[in-house]
Figure 1 (cartoon, rainbow, N blue to C red):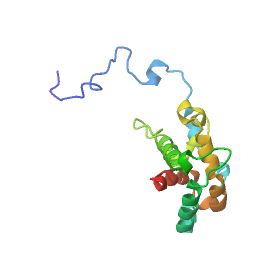
Figure 2: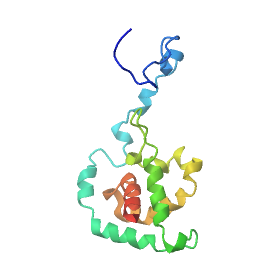
Figure 3: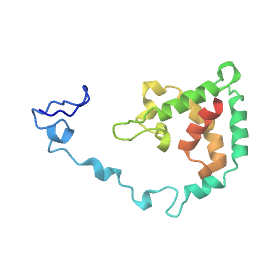
Figure 4: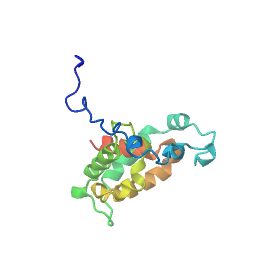
Amino acid sequence: MTTESKCPVMGKTHQAAGGTANQHWWPNQLNMRILRQNHPQDDPNGEGFDYAKEFKSLDFEALTKDVDALMTQSQDWWPADYGHYGPLFIRLTWHAAGTYRITDGRGGGGAGAQRFAPLNSWPDNVNLDKARRLLWPIKQKYGQKISWADLLIFVGNRAL
């Protein structure tokens, strides 16, 4: 017996079957890591795109003014609660960042993945498509100078 202290929750894992990882239970499973590789031709921004350079050229004051104006411009197709979209954008940001998994470092707001399936159809994210639709004219205006990921996080912080 070892005297080394271990976490009472994760310190003693059952190893009767040889381990607890998926590959121990299903040794013949497909290796999906190949799907996480990105070929340069698949980059919609092009091979020479430098986001840091584009972001530095962003007129941050103009972006801030546009976001502030958007928050109080209630739309007929999705009226703002009490005349302000701030709470909706805070929720959008919360849910964009809330997918982060500490176990493997995946998810979170860094990729703007909330725009895509399956996240965009999760019940918790209901009506956030409207918040993204409200942001579309701003994203079109600033183009590659700000990513969807950064815009989704920025609007929630600005709403605070």
